[in-house]
Image (cartoon, rainbow, N blue to C red):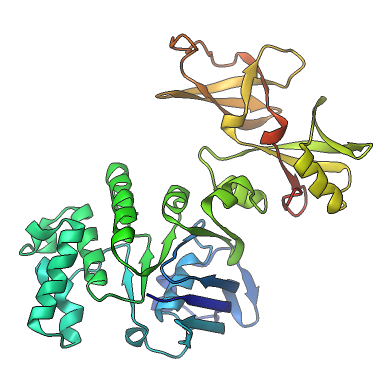
Length: 395
């Protein structure tokens, strides 16, 4: 158990002639949008966070955003170019990985194929010269927690993907590490097994007292697993907050579009102010800004002008009023209790989520391609972003 502190961490990959170095290939990869300097490509920019003891923090973002590179710096598998890393109050920048008292679970499991499950889990303890009795006790306790007691005599090749992942996690937790690092551990599993393993990770977290730092590109994993989420893009931290904070109050347009399924719809609109009251005009359809957001925008000296309006798909609803915005139905997706309508509005695609059944529980599948529908939304569902910087205007 330990707190982890990252202070102004930066990672720069120097230019390499010919092929990239091996360790670079294993990181997030070089995104074309990453900053390039004379010193090289900046993969992680000024990353700072205080992770509390026993907290579960998730780093999330698209491929190439720097999340895996950050995790590997914490593990000691990548050198830190600038900044300080503390584990349990101790500066560990120069410490070897084996001396940091952390455990890491990789995407590809990294099990020894010639060893049994028992020996895979016991390997690190044997390297520590733990007693045979202690090793046996810890391996069997971890196996019970993870439900793999019946597999201890098997080799990894005879196990399913989910079972191998449990073994990889078991190998990590037998060491009772101060910090558990997990790099996209569920990405090789099919959707059903991924959902199951996600639930098991939540249960596991309650059974073992350690700090978790988890990397994923899957925002559903981030929202369900994390006490706090770190959203990253192009090497920069975009927002740090609880799942609710990040979902309800995204700091900018990128976070708003990345967190949430289906993703948020964005419109070009106009912000107007009259007598201290802001309103949003979407092609002649005007709706007032709610009091709380209006007060913040006044305090921030927000000016009238073009903005980006964000609306989540389930915030839009169908109406019969001809005064409301009109769109054309493209694709209709039946999603069980909901219907996803893919619409064309002013040459852009948007998604509207509506109930599949009416109040009498009759199916509402009378949406035809190319038919016109009118939609509306409530003031409290609006997200307003600066058209140039993407910053949320109401926070």
